[in-house]
Structure formats: structure tokens, C-alpha cells
Image (cartoon, rainbow, N blue to C red):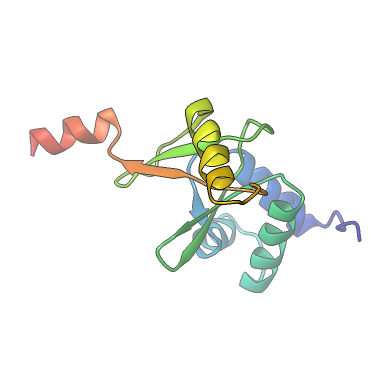
Length: 132
């Protein structure tokens, strides 16, 4: 079933394309309402889920929260995420890909998907931490 191109979907898509870090549905909803959009939180959740299902957004599960981000790369990739500021870098990791397939094969599995996220502090946050 194709998604309808509504004004709400267009607003969410545009905001996600200009948001470089991962955000929650609640954060996105707050940004939309602060900028004057009338949109329900349930609509934001549904639209983010649909965009993720269509491969237009990456999804990251952090603690008990689902986060979303528009990624530049349509190819399979992973992320390094700053735990302080949210800065995110997309990385292609051939060694990780080989390891995932080798580990699966050794265990009698075939890889159908995998997600690897690396969390840490970016250089700027490290510098700010040292200064305080």
C-alpha cells in the first residue's frame, strides 16, 4: 500500500532531511508544533514508521526509545553516535560485514540482517569535557 503524500508527511520529511542527528518521535513532534504545524503525535509515529519501512530513514533503538534519522547513504551502513551531542557519522565497515557472515556461518546461520551502532564521544565533546 502506497503512503499518501499529505502535508503532515511532507513537513516530517522536510524536517528529517534537515536534522543531522537521530531524534525521537516526541522530539520531532515538539519541533513541528513549535514551528506552527498542527500535527498529532500518533501521526508523527505512524509517518516515521512508514518512512523507515520504505527505507527513507534509519532506525536506532537506544534504551527504551526508538530514534530516527534521514541518512545520506542508501547502501547498508552503520553509525557512530556521540552520546553527548548526538552527532552521527555513517560508516561502512567491511570487517564487520565479514565478521557477521563468518560468525553466522560458524553457528549454522545465514545472515538476513544486522545492526551495529557504536556509541562514544565525538572530538568536540571530548574537548569540552576536558575543559570543564
